[in-house]
Length: 292
Image (cartoon, rainbow, N blue to C red):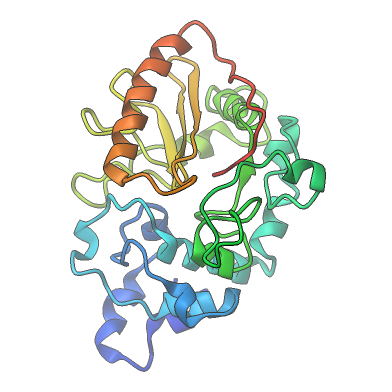
């Protein structure tokens, strides 16, 4: 990390240098860098660069690297986005825009912040604006991502059930070794549990199922991979069974649903949907866009 973001080394604070210099991008992708789950970075930032500086100043979590099952890693993701940008000289949006794998799958082209009014009208509203003037619509829900310009490594994508299903099918084909812009071996590397921290279920940027406590439910195979989204969304892909489960709920509208209820709801939906998905691998058409 320090190679790409020198300020991450906290040169003005010697006590933090040792562990920070040991942090790699792999640690960020597996949620095991030792950074806090979430911090209000936006409180001391006005733009993307400010959010990155705030993330670079973050103190080490009291649990250290032992806590690897965090679910809202905006601190790490802002660092990941910055490292990609500085290593390539291109923004995250520019890196994603060519979208070789997505374009090849013929997925809908509105994965980033919707600007077209016709599309915007189809986007589901999320939480209420702080000034009481309606609800956020077509704007990322996460305040850190919003301050950083709308797209970061952990928030800012919009899609439909149909569009997410197209991506899932493309990943299934790649995982199986079929013709795909994404090499199957590289995808399997990214979706294999890393075990950098005892008890962690994370792969590189993906999560893997854990019996009894996973949002994937208990009917999905151990080779499955997926991820959840803060607003009540999730995607789980099971290459062993050749099925996927797309869940686009809206737990933040009109007000937030407690996290415990969200996890229970997702697990129940995943169990039922996985049972039904044995008969079909096609995602159901969703008329509205959701903030993933």
